[in-house]
Length: 384
Ligand code: GAL
Image (cartoon, rainbow, N blue to C red; front, side):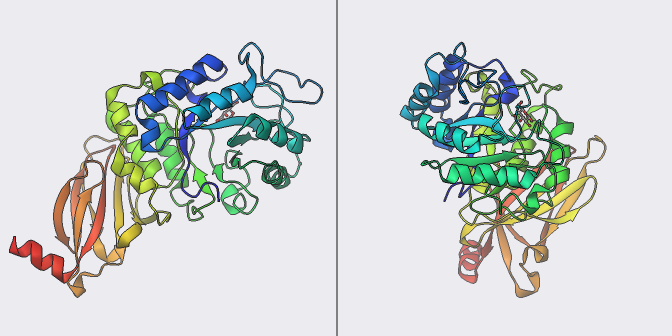
């Protein structure tokens, strides 16, 4: 099965848009390995829109020879030689969003071509799709074409949430599906996406995940989707949200230039572990208001994570926010206690009963991983 866990990788769009070429992609492949991102799980190097020749030649899709002089097989081989996987982009309409040829009517031809190049992932956009056309069938057709092209290719649908994809993309063969318009490099943009999707992830499970769009961590307002940039704390919260909600984690910044603070965020082992947990369960909401959101997520080995996101921007609004353990299926009248670990620092913060009340300043969050203390372990820690 493909996409057993949320896909991790890098995509060219957020930073580079049309400014892509062979050398850049190779440098990104080098950097993702050298800087430890592959070891952390980021495996896919994905070229977004603007790679193709403007017109099809002999009915075939062709890379722009000025940008990709040795062709796509050459580049895919290079990416594979680094232990990485290679992704590319097309569109369900006849023309992509940036004006390059799309796959409408050519789904089976293009899928075969992608397979012959060694493509492992296809992002499939939705621009210029004929009004009144059957959008579900368009995605199904490419899903079937990919399944019959002779190579395992992840099918990453991207129709920006049109027609409630959470209700049909999994059954129509997508391995990931974009559910919103494009992210921008700002607090407002990623919190808007969070608000619109935190209740829309129940279908996340091996084989298909809701894709909240590429990460902006590390962009620092440079590149195509720049919109003011974020503070370090905001980037950390954005990453924690995407990890907690089980979104694919696709870096959008220039990997060669990500600063150390943002590299620390993207490489945070405990947050990545939440995203890649073996149970592959979606998170669910506990108590949510317009200002803060508390959520939980069952983890492997009987653990459960709880998250408190304060996305209110009013600086005076520092709140004591609680998570009641009864809401996690851990009733205190049974004498059950939880040992909590901070999911950002990995620090053991101790044993709690009934619930936890924490001060969370605006645009900050807390995530704890909780483990039930059995009588034996309880005894042990009391004796210490
Ligand atoms: C948009 C898509 C972006 C990017 C762009 C390329 O529709 O949401 O992520 O792929 O097209 O033109």
